[in-house]
Length: 421
Image 1: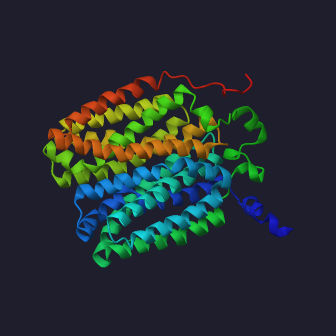
Image 2: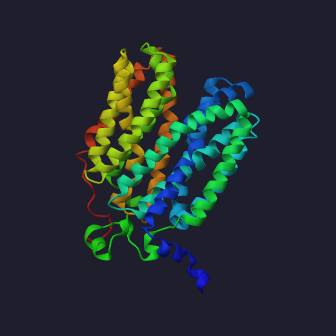
Image 3: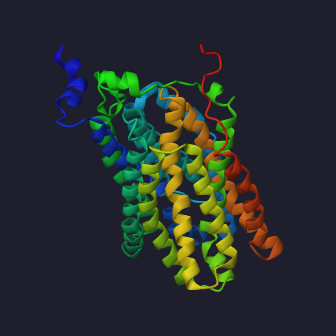
């Protein structure tokens, strides 16, 4: 009998609220997605070009296509997380993601490269992010925004050291060996921490999110649990989703073509790289601020703030001839980057409850990842067809204005369709 009690006792024995342990595991989970992030893949692009005799456009297109195909699985992955819980899902995803990274080390041509991109983007950038952020939302309620922002800060600070470390590895190892090392890293870190320390829901252990008492929960935590089809029938969901798609779509366009955008307004590669480092550092601070604001203010205002910052960034991308303007660009762009993950990690759960959160977040992730795969392509098209990014930037500014104006005024749905008033 004692054996069956084991998972419960770990939570019972914890000297602090177990949600903090879950938060720490989820944060490590987010950091483990680094090998699947664009900033990592960008370091391998030249190797792929030389090794497989491909053009830069071809490698970028394979990456975009791989990301797009990977996105289609995320609603399914979200449903599986709802079904199996964060602990089992985390273990399975860690094993599969490590296998995908191993696969990247044996790629021999464009088709295998595409399959590799589908696997690492779907499992790392998609599923691993989903299980990590969903588990934080399960264990926290009032502090949800802040907890997500702490995770993003840890992730941003890790990036600052990880990218130079990876650059350093290229001087010692062959590129295939680096994928192999990352695979081992994910396996030996992910599997033990998810299996050993992750737990599904506070309610499974007689606890409440935020460690609230039952009384506090009754008065302070009115939670309606919506299903995905119910959510999709609300206007607010589509307005928020449109707003959330603008930043990854147009923002990724700005990041991928950053060097060329900077050169178009007269700045060097070095300035572009320096600005990127500044953005990474500032977005850690922005995330903290947004996390705090999200727990206090209406979510529509947060989306509008992000879209205003995006509009300012896109306007500056065409006009920043002076160095001080590139600093301003970094400030605005860090607001764009610092908002998204914190918003997605807390707001959907705040409005639509936690019961079907995996499915809802999976659907949102699919939309966001698809927009990420489209952004760089439309920016490249603008440059190839018109010799400048201005055309796509003006179109993007006009499109962004729509959700930017609607988000603060759209009403939060009060009642689930089909539920008792």
